[in-house]
Amino acid sequence: MKKLAPLLLALSLFLGASCESDGYSSDAGSGVEPWPKPATTLQAAIQIAQKKFPDARCTEAGYSDRSGSLVCTVVLVQGDQRHDLQLDEQGGVTSSTDAPLDTETRGVLEAYGKLAPGIGMLQAGKSAMDEESGYWTMAAGLGNERGTILYQVLLVKGQKSKVARVSAANGRVDSVQDLDGAEMR
Image 1 (tube, rainbow, N blue to C red):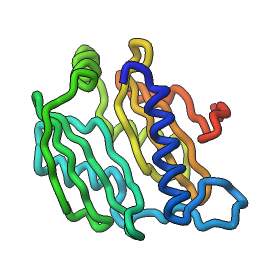
Image 2: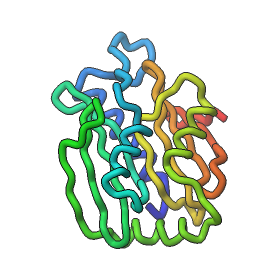
Image 3: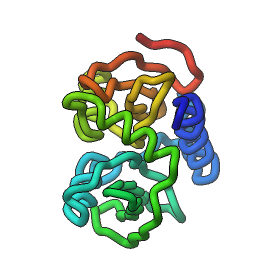
């Protein structure tokens, strides 16, 4: 997470691989169905997961299509523990695993802790959606890009998808890019 380019690439690959393998496409005009909007928003899925670990911070969350149904993965961090929760499209927790926190994530969270007061992933998603009207949040992640702690939020609207970079310090949307990398703002 030292650089967010890998996160952006991962989000792009996440969407691209899921689209190709499951019959969806992010290419406008391709004739392929757009990503279906889930019954439970990503923000609601994060809130459901945080009820299980109320003192945890969400560092990653996102939807993927598995065997024809949408599944949401929410990663929460509390102390030295990482909690990965899988939720179905209706918001029911289907699995939960715990693992020790990796060094890279620990470093990002230490830098995040120096922000005063800093925003959470829910606010980052809201800021991104406020900036791009009509889009819904498919995935988001917290990272460190050259000393700047920010969230990358993957937004989807029909067959269009964009990545918004949101400051973790103040919730300001720093930039919005389509998945091809062209600067939108």
